Length: 207
Image (cartoon, rainbow, N blue to C red):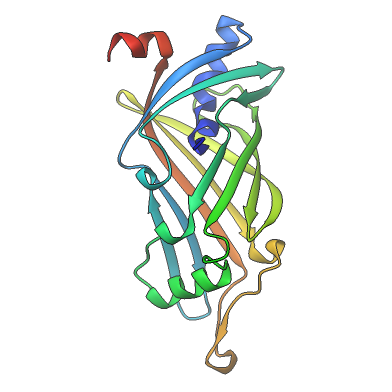
């Protein structure tokens, strides 16, 4: 399974590739336990969150090759399959509605695929925009996800956050109690990652 984490290495790669002026740059990534994917939504009554820890959909150790052309970053590991039934929530009713909405039995995974990252050449903060194709219930839509990055001790932290409309995927928000409880059509996808990143040759030395 290829890893969505690859889109988040932009801040490290932007400076490394530019300075080295290489056509490709191999790196090793060690994913930390704090990594998590969240989907946030709300109704006219209550907010809800679906969470999935990174260990459920991303390998702990990854090897990625990046290439840069002008201000665009392309990565060898650029897609992810997210198991829908691995999400958890304190709101069981909302989670049940979510499974029904995305037809989790018929479509057990969501697909996310990176086309490229447009780099801002900033080492931290707003490091660029990821151009991503999201597939839900067999419908694919393209979005631009802002990518942010920081440093926490010896580890890098990365994040993407984007609000999307579920109607983009021909989905209709659930309605309950004869229309008294209505789920909003907008959801917010957030991915937070913490990881160690180093060139592959250095990673081999510390094994």
